[in-house]
Image 1 (cartoon, rainbow, N blue to C red):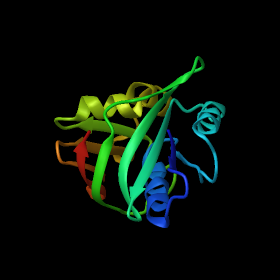
Image 2 (cartoon, rainbow, N blue to C red):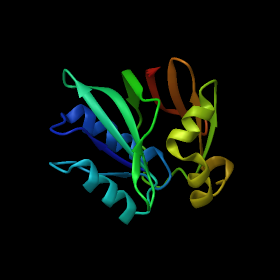
Image 3 (cartoon, helix red, strand yellow):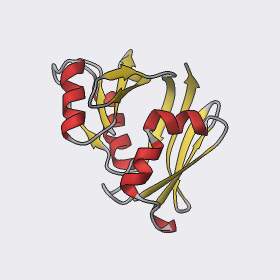
Image 4 (cartoon, rainbow, N blue to C red):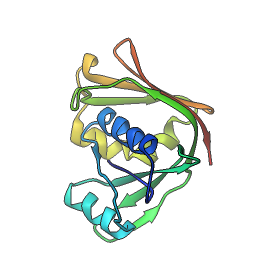
Length: 158
């Protein structure tokens, strides 16, 4: 998955993009600069990514995450988006997470947004101590790596 921000994003949105890229197997963060959507899609294809995750901000804070599905034939915006009402993350070493397990009432929706099936094929199942456990709840998304809480966001599904 390729993580980036809206145009002219502030530091907080960039920080969230970098944090999410560290959490997901083979995630990559890209400084957007003046790149248009087509250029982001091209970068995703070149990097073998099937999703682009864009963090939009409001009032200098991350406010919404939108997803784009990327294929060889084209691209499309995905639904739902995710409104963010606050987040925190612990720094992870890039590549530490080799697998991902998704649970929770919004788990299936989240799996589709992140292209979970493709991610599992690329990353594999991972050893138990290398797997990130994600809980996609109705009002929050949280992740643990082993027993350590590594990410939490208060959210609203759009």
